[in-house]
Amino acid sequence: MIRFALVVASVLGFVLTAALGNMMVPLLRELQRAARGTQPDSDAPDSPVPTMGGLCLMVGTLAAVGVGWLAACAAQPSLLGSDRQMTSRLLIALLGSLAFGAVGLADDLARIRSRYPNGLGLGLRRTQRLALECIAAALVLGLLALNGCLPTGLILPGAGYVKCTLAPLLWAVLLVAMAEAARVADGADGTVCGAAFAAMLGLMMLETQLGWFPLAVFPAALAGALMAFLLWDFPPAKLHPGRCGCLYAAGAIGCIPLCIGYAELSIPLALPFWVEGGMVVLQVLFCRWKGRPLFAAAPLHRWLEKRGMSAVNIFYSLCALSVCGLALAVRLARWA
Image (cartoon, one colour):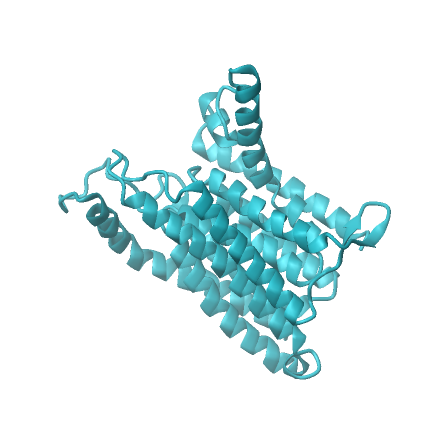
């Protein structure tokens, strides 16, 4: 019956996100036009693709998780009794993901107020964005600590689970760094959604392997929602996830493993995000050191574009990188 709940959550996530996408494309396009101060002329072929599509992911996933969790509780009533801490862990993972998505939404709203030719500016100032991301990370860690669910160590290859007093600080840095890396990846059609989809499939499998099977309703619902969104964002894109979608996906990849006590699993699962963000960091540091760029372009998807790779092939390449990260996560989980 728990498997049935996962199927229900996944299918509902797909259906609800697809339906919301159909409704929100014209609304978001008009919002973007109004924010730029342009007249609602006829839809030109070169009109900007609406952003903030991550709202569809957030709303669709939330509804699908609710229905899937009710089905899981009906199949396993102990989830509301002796195992009620499972509900706390699920709610904290959801809240943390939504908190990071809200930071991305604020960033998107700041971007569309600009007068740039493509209708998108730079968004929030770096200090504002980092402060909001730190607040979101502190909220997740604080709720986990209050419920007695905060992990106090980490898995080290060959050593198993090792306790560490600085673990909460490491998890906070990890969540913020992952959000920043996902923000850098915004702009490549389907890259974030494709990488997050592979990560959600991996989390479903890992939660089953590690004994947290009922909590897999969240990654199941988000996997279905991401699959629906890929149909919209696949070139030629009709709706971009925006930074709210990117940070929501990053928040889910970070918060789900953290809430079951295996935060280190998010490191390999977010491998494409780390590569994208890492290239930007290296580019900036090398420019400050040598006064010239290290790469012809950064992040990775821009570098691949400059080398003549199509958007579809970039999507496949980064999805393959995500699968490699999933394999590393499975390997790491064996030391748990």
